[in-house]
Image (cartoon, rainbow, N blue to C red; front, top):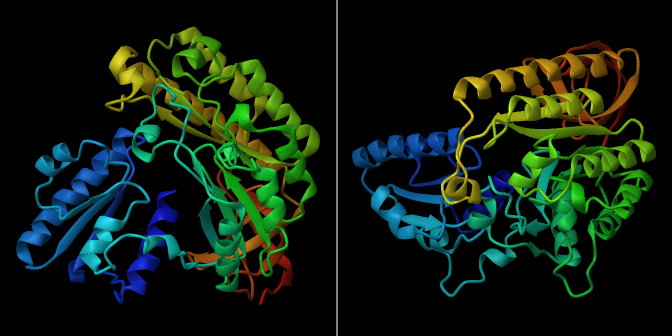
Length: 414
């Protein structure tokens, strides 16, 4: 979501006559787009601001703007903490930054700004905000309640991105399957996918992040039926214990989560499914963690994003629950999940050796091309290619994190 916000902001600044610079030391306007989902991300943002303060002291006329999830409702606190910052803009609300950059007064400028693709892939927000208020999460307090974009508006953006070279778009939402519930005609994500499917030049459609209770059979059927929609799901579990899920306010049980995974695999046996897990959440016992571990071992995900719980000020958990799992226990649980993930992902990827996979060519890395399969696997390969091509790649080697192969067929794109 932050990447999509930055792309839109950059496109607006380009329209205002500004040019991007590769070196922050040469910039007249510096925008820091922040994430505070985890403590580490917030600390990085604060350290970056401290470095920019020193730069501003050395160079007259430099303007600094702060946006993203660090900018919450208590702006007075931020202004006291960072008095050298010239503008504070909540996520997707760029008017103050536009004021620094010379945007017309009166608002409305940013409504007509569409991002420019920086390559063959692009991110397109379809729903902003979140209504869930999971007890550990700061996002609803910073990005607000859910607000869906009309299908025709999203289609116009995707058409422009495709005309500019994007071959794949990822439809974004904090809970992307909540899309449309607040619109008058109540479309859903399946309707959005069908509307975008015939956009000229578009080869692939992805979507994230999925919320288990919102991922309906109708949406699963659309993914299975539509050739351009990739069989790739990001489906956070967070915990494999019902009591912990209840304290997290996740709104589903482990049994209900399992049923969603089974529905996906029944419709698309080769679908890629990744998940998110938080270890060491408030009150999590060794036995409750073991249940999470067992669910992960049983369901065998393609990738597990695991994090140790850290309190985010202002959330329900930070206000009402004790962060009572010792740091050493959190670390041990995190390591156990990482080791399990490496083993399972390694076995899943090893089974792909000898198969032929369709890969969208994205970029060159360390002298080789790289891209992703429809199920989201990272592949490295050689060949006479260019970004945006679709290649059929025979997989020759596998690790838990990526695949290596050789191109056997290239489908050039315009």
